[in-house]
Image (cartoon, rainbow over all chains, first blue to last red; front, side, top):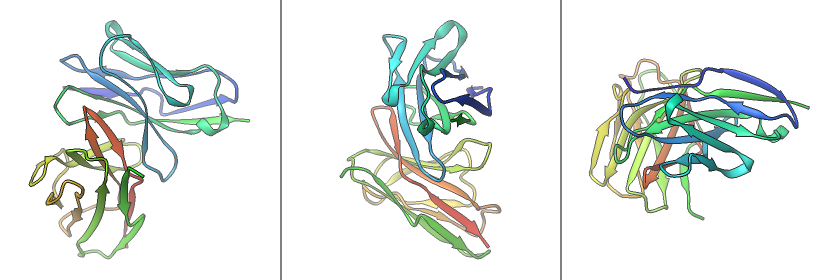
Amino acid sequence: AQSVTQPDIHITVSEGASLELRCNYSYGATPYLFWYVQSPGQGLQLLLKYFSGDTLVQGIKGFEAEFKRSQSSFNLRKPSVHWSDAAEYFCAVASSGTYKYIFGTGTRLKVLA
Amino acid sequence: DGGITQSPKYLFRKEGQNVTLSCEQNLNHDAMYWYRQDPGQGLRLIYYSQIVNDFQKGDIAEGYSVSREKKESFPLTVTSAQKNPTAFYLCASGKADTQYFGPGTRLTVL
């Protein structure tokens, strides 16, 4: 069955520290991969996406993610976290033309001043 | 400004009532989606539409209904048959395999 796993429900980091949020997927075909961010009570904002090509993708707000086919992972990283990055982060996977995403359950990020 | 609007932001319903959540987009996207979000469960797909006058059930369609009479609009009706409707509802539209989300509607059943 197709699935997306975000193993960390909560992560706490200090402002200025580096960040890595994990995402693992189980998918038969070559997946399309996405990271979204959600502030409390708001909709989801697209951070970045991977369809093909360079496995290291750059997104908005200084985020990047690396697709590792051998590990079935698409981890999100940021070298230096800002207090405004506190939010919930969702990984999603889809295949071309299916119009259906599968979302992970999210990782809530807390940033300490 | 291009974007996706959802209204109302907050909605209260008495048990046994049907309510309709609005979703409008001016991005000229063909596809539109409705998701339900509950704490700790991520997003679950209710219905989606790839084209006007056509829509498909998602993973949790029971107790919900939709229509797609215009490209720009995809309203969701939460019927009295939905046993636990209190949740945050997100609408999205999509193009080229990428989905973009509206700000959401929080529905509370009193």
